[in-house]
Image (cartoon, rainbow, N blue to C red; front, side):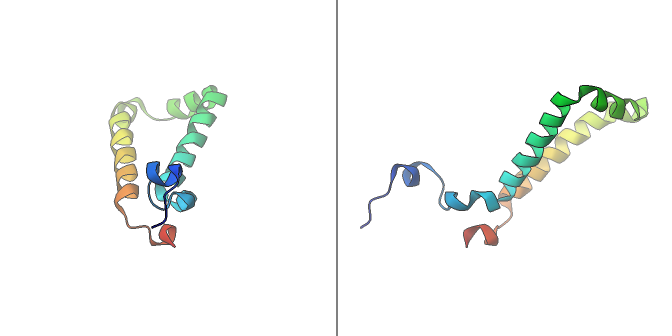
Length: 84
């Protein structure tokens, strides 16, 4: 029997092709958004000020729930491409 390397014992099966996984794509998009927010905070404020106040109050919980559901769905969906 072939002895597993340290990487193979610690990491998930198929980790070599993780760049194809939905979760990795989401992490990339999230990183880009956070980078944009930190590099251009005034643009984010201008964008948020363009939203009417009555909608702005409801936006935060909706965004949190939607982001959570997208991440969970990305983890649960079969990713046939990534396994090849």
